[in-house]
Length: 128
Image 1 (tube, rainbow, N blue to C red):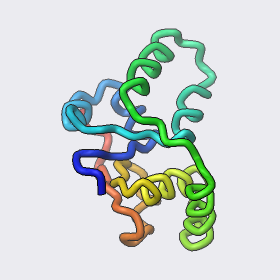
Image 2: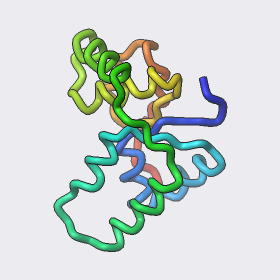
Image 3: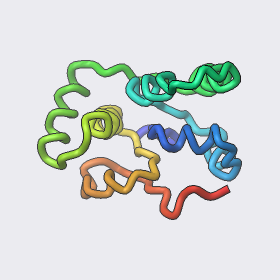
C-alpha cells in the first residue's frame, strides 16, 4: 500500500466541494488519487457553474488521475461479477485494488467488498 495515499470516491470530492472543512483538513498532506470515472461524473453535472468547474480544475489538478488500463478493466469485471456493484463503483474499487490504495468513501455499497479492497467508510456522513 502506498503510504499516506488514498483513492477518493466521487461523494468525498462532492462533500469537500460543498464545504466540509473537517474532511478537507484530514486529507491535507496526503497523496490523493482519483479514478477517471469520478472525474467524468464530476464534470458531467448539468450545471454550467463556472466557479464549480474552476474549483474542480484546481482540486483535481492536485490529485493523481488513474486511467482505466486493461488491468483495471479486468479487475472491474471480476469485482462486478463477484460483488454485484454498479459499473462505476466496480471501476473505482478495481482502481483502488489495482493501485493498492485505500478507498475513501461514504457509499455503504463498498462495505460488501469484505476486505478484498481496503475501504475507509465515512459513516454518518455528511459532517461539517
